[in-house]
View 1 (tube, rainbow, N blue to C red):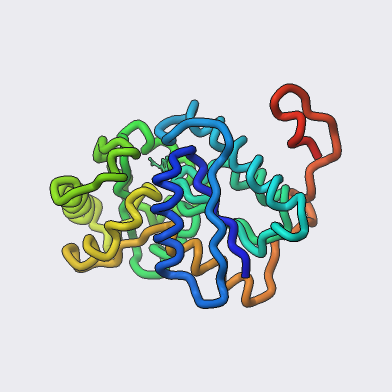
View 2 (cartoon, rainbow, N blue to C red):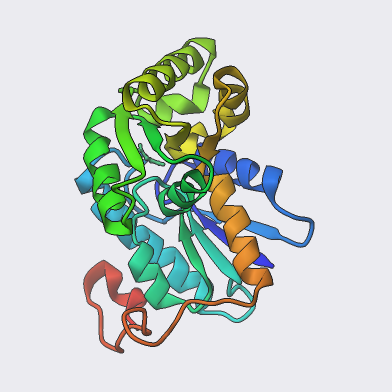
Length: 246
Ligand code: 2AL
């Protein structure tokens, strides 16, 4: 299957890192095509960033789907705010997975309660909104910021790993939870080491989303076009978004 992996921020280094994390877990028959938007923020750390990132995700899904040769069999949106997820599901009939949604589902199958450890504290409200949107209020026991900037994760060393480990240990104890969800695609490379150190399931949404996407593909399941995820209505878009109108 062809899996379109969209990094919603515009950091090429992070796109490459996320692509590697996806390839590390993908099956032999999966081709990972990693892209990022042509515009927008280098990292997504708040609502203003996310507004542009959502449009960037829509851009990439629209462009990939415009040509049969590039049309994906599944799409993964690799930012923990799941920007543009509903728009992408309108724009394609391929299954579309957000990494937060995928990670919450995986965590809920492994523990009665889980905690999220994320980057900047200001992004906690975005994760909290998603917990409510997806109906995980009774399973997510806490969301914890580390105040590590997203782009700092590109050069994560032993100190940063120790900081995230400490935040996770505190979260497990304070929340009485049994699993940790990592709240940033940029944390993917740290997953195995953290899981080994903590001795509980540590879920990276990129890996979870890739495996769920492969499963949905293998089951022949696609996004419903009946109702809310129907194809966008044809209309003219103006300004810089002109090529993206349906
Ligand atoms: C993210 C993420 O996954 N990518 C990004 O730019 N920002 N999420 C986060 N909570 O910081």
